[in-house]
Every structure is written in structure tokens, then in C-alpha cells.
Image 1 (cartoon, rainbow, N blue to C red):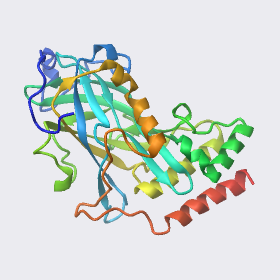
Image 2: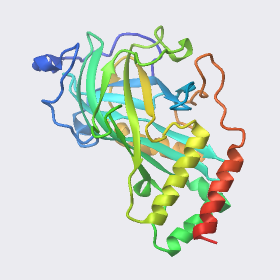
Image 3: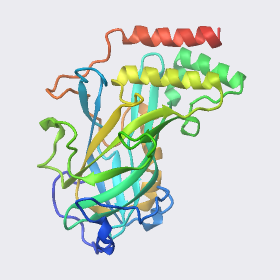
Image 4: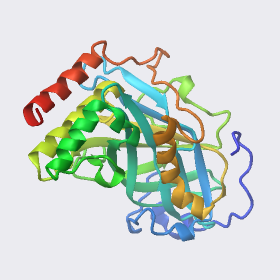
Length: 327
């Protein structure tokens, strides 16, 4: 894929944005459009804007005087915006990431889009979309090689309890519009986020074709109806947050600026299988098919480092659970 700000491929028709005066900036109102299932209209996709530089940001110490904001570019092309040649958005691919725990091995993390609506206007390099998403976390197959994980899974299977060993059984984390936990729909809008300062290493004005931004507040884990499973799911999320700097801590706001390459055509079959290709890649080598992510850094470029006693805290949490339920 291209990595410069060349022109889009031919074939743009446009007109969808202009079909409703409420769609226009400065305050796009998309409520006239239904929220659509993200995978139900792949056969309508004709054009896409790939995200070569997905720049994420979150507070690693939320609520403290110095929240220690982190910045991290996830792997290239982890997200995309898909639409028709007239500019109606019908699908948005969102991020997946692998996170390694010394005791749990690789955890797969996916932001799954549950609904979307919106428009793109290529000539003006603008777009507006609304989204709803749910976070999903589950163990990579390689994690089963870890003794703790194997012991826990054996216990769960023996007691006919759900264990997050694949996406179908993933831990589900609710999300919302920042500041409004009751509103699951949040906006994706043109331009960079203005909610916090952005370091130059997280900006790509010279290379990118365009940029948009979104922010989502992390909510509670969805209860399963079983107290043991719910306690275990919370344990997994606590360990994930210890290692990631509270990226998915309840109440925290995860923001990302998505820097696009020029619009190109959609391969509909490749779009359908994109998520599985990413999961297969993460499962195989802890990597990503289009290149690695950058390390998490603070504004001054200093690398984020997990707590010095991370391993001890992980171990203690796991041992407490095993002692209470398994041993």
C-alpha cells in the first residue's frame, strides 16, 4: 500500500454527503441513518481508506495529578474505512493487538465494531461516522502452553464454565461515549483530537493523505451470570491493565488519531477475512501481518515501562485465584 499523499484511485462519484444538510460540518448529525451491522454490507463496499498510522493515546495513571499520558502507534493497516463510490460508509475495521503476559502468555485484544453509519467526501478530505464497539479479550492458543493457563482451563472445562480461549468465548468489555456511560454510540470525525497535546512523533502530516479521530470510554466487563467466571475475567483484565498501563481500565478514555493513505479499491473477500488473518498472525508469532507497532511512549519520547513489581503482582493475583477456586 502507498505511504504518501498521492491522489486517490479513479472512480469516485460522490453525492452521499450532500444528500442531507444535517450531515455537514461543523456539527455533523447522522441520526437520520440507521446503525448498521458492520459485516452485513461487505458486498456494497467499493472504496476504502487504509489506516497506515493508527496513533493511540490513553492515561496510564488516570485520576492522578500527573496522569502520565501514553502514546503508541499500533501496527500499520490495523484499521480501515470502507464505503461506496458515492461515499456512504458501510464498514469500519478496528484494531486488534497482542499483549504478552509472563504468566498468561499472549492475550488477543480486539475492538469489535457492533454498529456504524457515516459518509466520506474524498474531494474535501472529510468524513463523519458514528460507531459502537465492544472490547474483546481472549487467550491465544500459544497461551495454553503456560502452566497457569492450562491448569485454569482444565478447571473451567471440568466444571462446565466458559473459558476465554477463543473469540466466541472472549471477555467482553463495554464502551461508551466519553463522559456518558449510557450512550454506546460515539463519533469518528475529521482532524486530529484536540483533547490533549500530541507529540510530533505521533503526527504524520507529511506522509498521510488525511486524518480523523475518535475517543471511547472504557466501561465495565459484561457479567456472565457465574461469579467464578466473572472473578476470573476481572483477574485477566487486571493483569492486562498492569502490563499495558491501564489501557482498558474502567473509566479510562482510549483515543486514537487514524492517519489514512489515499483511497483505493476494496477486495471484498480480503475485507471479510481481514480479522482472521490478523488473529492467525498474532497466534503464530506474536506479530502482525503488515509490520510491528511502536513502543508506548510519553509525550517527551520516554518509553513507558510497566511497574517494577509487575511479575510479583501478576503472580500474586493468579495464586490468590487458584488458591480460592482450584487448589
